[in-house]
Length: 469
Image 1 (cartoon, rainbow, N blue to C red):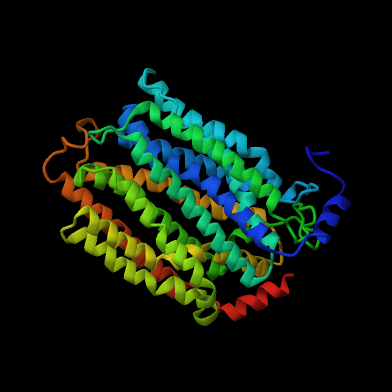
Image 2: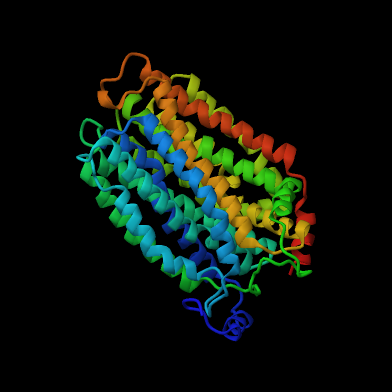
């Protein structure tokens, strides 16, 4: 019997006796992304800075490392999704036990990533980063895939899913806010250059925080949808044709729109934190303002959370995630091409963030809808596999985005060895343009994804989800 497994009767009894959906579920689910995202952000936002500026790795080599690791992850993510689907449920649920099992390993490998191995020969240093980063990605997938799939098992109600998505988005935003607020105050010296030993201190503190959050998620959240043990056979007793499952993704326009929109956000908009590091470090020469930028970016999320539910009922999800993206594009365009001060930069980015708030808050509700629509099209409920596929695509894009930013910084002439104050003429201005124009392009692409591809109304989606209960 697999670790922690018990007879199915205990699992069924736990599902049947589950309390009604409530605040414990929402707080618990929020804590999951709060903890997990705090480590994701510290790695995605600051590993490049650590490797390039501290350990002396060339930006192009770091970009190649990230690309190789995520290409290798392609071989593992769907396999992990299948493992999650096939493994029998425990007394505590089908998905949530993974959060407790892998929380500590995830913390450990995050800390190892920030161990300073500058003294190693260059080739060994590159190998070290590649191996540790690859293992870190695998461990993270064993948390993120079950965590994402769990939302479909907590509730099938569309309004409750929107509430879950709201709380997850708050957790995600707070998980980004904590490291991006603390890091600029902790990691840089008086000349705005990074300090080596501070990175590992930050990773240890956030690692412990992540473990606590994931364990609390395990105990606060309740799964309510019974999932029978998954196998490689479909309902007719025939082997599942994975090629057909993959092809069915191409028929799922909800999935295409949401995943493309998410990928665009990862590549163009969520990298804003990385480009801001260099804008404030090189253009404004004031990294202390990064903390201010991070704090105020949380304001639209709080306000949006208060009004998103009635707005969804009145306008529907599609309109709320579509038209505001154009407003955000205008704001980012102004920061890119007009003169800016730190205050005006922060204000315009705050306004852009306000326009994109509903797309952030509703993202996981839209993904849950896309997963339901996939089950509706295929007649198979393989949530772990579907979420693993989404996770791979999005995380690959997120990590490739790190590579892209590294390459773009080199393209505009940034040289880490010259420090923040010693860059060549024109480099600071080009970094500022990059910091505004890149997310502007992303907002335009998000609008295109949801306006032209997403094709199912909220009322139609409700009927589909109800039919799957």
